[in-house]
Length: 168
Image 1 (cartoon, one colour):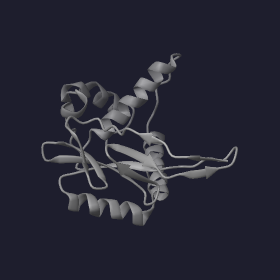
Image 2: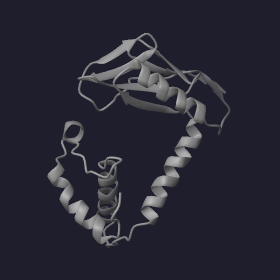
Image 3: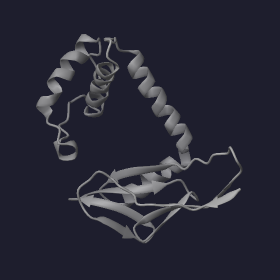
C-alpha cells in the first residue's frame, strides 16, 4: 500500500482573485464569493492549494473525497450552508440530486436521432434551461457566468414545451 497526499490547484469558473483566508479558499466577484469546501477531515488548504489527507490504499481499493462550492455573500451564510451539508451528509444530498434529475428527465419526451451528439445536445439544452430557471419559474440570464444570453433560451423553451415540459 502507498500513502498518497496530492495537492491540486483548485479552480472555480468565476472572475476574480483567489483568496486564502485561514483554512478557507474562495474567489470573489463583486459581493459574491465562491468558497471551495470539503467534508470534514478529507482535505485541508495550505497556501493556495487544496491537499487531500493521506489515505492508505490496498491494491484495488479506492477513496472518495467530496468537495463542493458554496456561493454566497457572507462568511456567516457560507458557514450555515456548510453545516447543513455536513449534518445532512454529502452522500444523501448527492443521491437526492441524482433522483431529482432522473425524475426530471423521465418526465420528458425525447427526440432520438441517429447522431449521439445531437441527442446529447437536445438533452443538455433541457438541463441548461432548467438550471437557468429561478425557483419561482422565471428564466434567468446567466451571461455574467457563462457568456450566455437570455435570448439564447428561446429555442430550448419552445423545445421544452414541445417535449411536454410546461413547468420547470
